Image 1 (tube, rainbow, N blue to C red):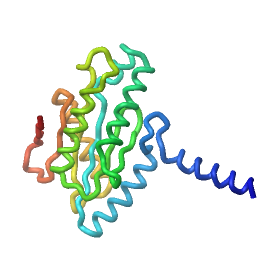
Image 2 (tube, rainbow, N blue to C red):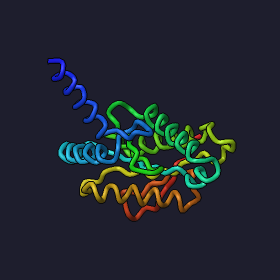
Image 3 (cartoon, rainbow, N blue to C red):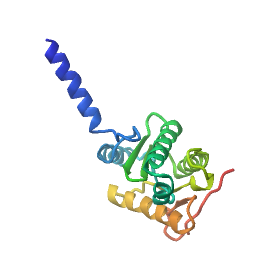
Image 4 (cartoon, rainbow, N blue to C red):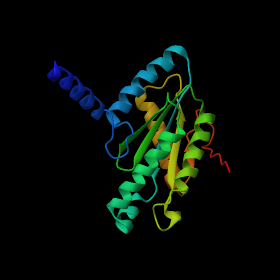
Length: 190
């Protein structure tokens, strides 16, 4: 009986380990992709909004090179803590690998997602781990699910938005407009 309880406990711990990134405590890539597929299906079936944010720490290699990997890991954990605090229970934040994060926002419009992205960007700017605060910044891409999106096109669009944020100087939020005739827009919140 005791061994059965121990096995069940071990099984639960192993199951959780398969879903969680060790360093940040966020979901890992595998768990995120499973959740994305589920939310994509539900959103398409019921016509609900679904938005996604993709974030990348600016100049992370320089953080590791200048301050050491220990400080880099501290910075990654701090970003993970911010993401946990700034999202709702029904949202999912994950570390995709390295210094890249994603946040899936069910029942969230693009406008609401952009607001969340700007809050996250502002909090990252205030991380006080590095000796020079100007090194604390993050670039974020945002996208809302379109009717004809599959998960691949949805992720591609948010990745393109993140790439634009990096190309336009970092420490910003960008989106690829749902209407291709519109230009990419950035919202700035104080």
